[in-house]
Length: 335
Ligand code: ADE
Image: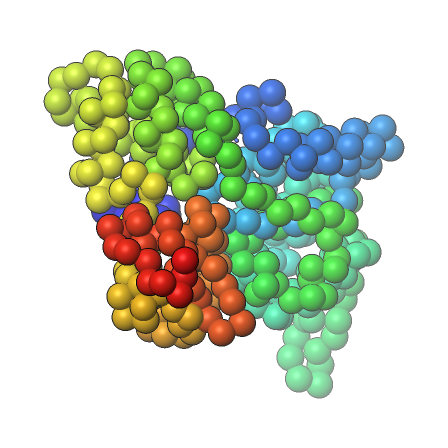
């Protein structure tokens, strides 16, 4: 079972639990201190001016809390929020319908914004800049363009792949925030908080083990905790111990640093087929049967974060720590 790939296929029970675990107020939100500070300034200033906040762009790996932050902004601004995503806005008319139904100061959250097509972006530009909706009515010689005034609103867009967002769109946001990986201590605090909310007893050693395998990502941390809870349920146990945490990871085929099958294939390609590298990203993408952009944006960031690989002008190179993790000796050239 893949933790990463399961992201969009949660069961109803998972979704209910996720809602329970999601922080509802700033004080419950752990980590990303710098972003919280900066957002608070923007929110406070807008509140004093009695205006909606400027359009915001959040980017970063899946599961780092982009939607949670958008919801917290809506809560703090006391403004309603409408949530949609790039792939569901297929035609310009879809976006026009969403925009023309916005209330004053409402927040429109568009997830996976890199999947908006260019025609949709063209509708967004004037809406963001001057709160105008330009729509074409009719076809051919009789077609005419009308302009509708929109209420003051805020667009919050989120993406895992900032490079795929066009420059004109990026430039129209008043502030852009990069969500970074959390540190081990924050992930441990998140697991601790979630365990309390789920009424789960968990030993400190188990928290450390689950946190270390959580890829510095809250969503993954919570998912591991939920699977540990399943393990308890099925085995009639009552405390998440070190043993339960280890068994949970084993059952999920996740190793103690959170690596999954595809991560191991990636490292093995560099290490076994190319003697540690350098090897081009296209070759790695072919070995994983994935798009080059996915390798760069989804797989590599975590492996670089844990010091397992490096990007060089000649290609990807495995670090000695990766050899060690896979039980192999690094070649002399890397030492
Ligand atoms: N659950 C998911 N993300 C969280 C965060 N940043 N703080 C607290 N709980 C969370």
